[in-house]
Image (cartoon, rainbow, N blue to C red; front, side, top):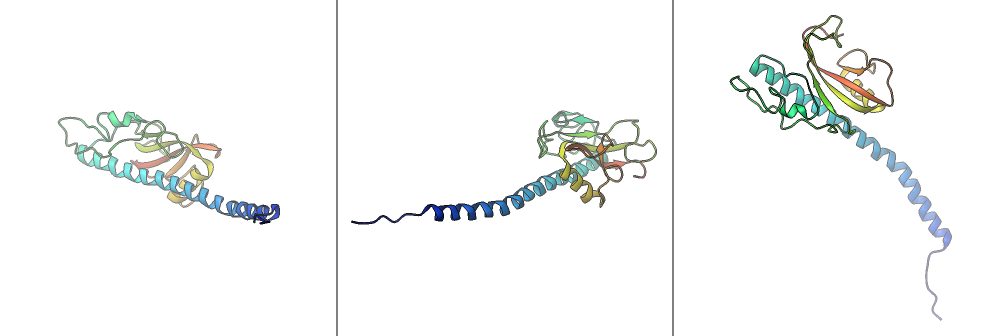
Length: 183
């Protein structure tokens, strides 16, 4: 009689244990790389908007008005569409991400309030920044560290809003320009 060759229960359990150990070692590294990619995406978008906004200002002599989410695509004048009869040489961005356009499914807003209280300096001055919504704690702190060289959230180019303590999800403001010194 011919005997069939098969795995014993012990052999199967050893193989499953090895796979579980490998997964436990590899999974955190994979998730860390995903988070790094999301942070890099936000920082790249910040740099693109900074170039676009300063190009707009260079061409027209004014700053783009405040806009929220997808409205930045159609805001006139703006990043994607512009005013007629001016030196607008856009579009400066292909499109502005929609209401869930950042890597954590939150929105990006462009803020350029006129005559607003200063957020990034000691005295009131005209400021322009990107507001990023729903940023996880570790990502918000990493963005702050990358841009400011320290994690504070209350000084430098990256601020949490409102300026309380870091929470599980944060609203982060990243300064693009300010008519005055930054504290």
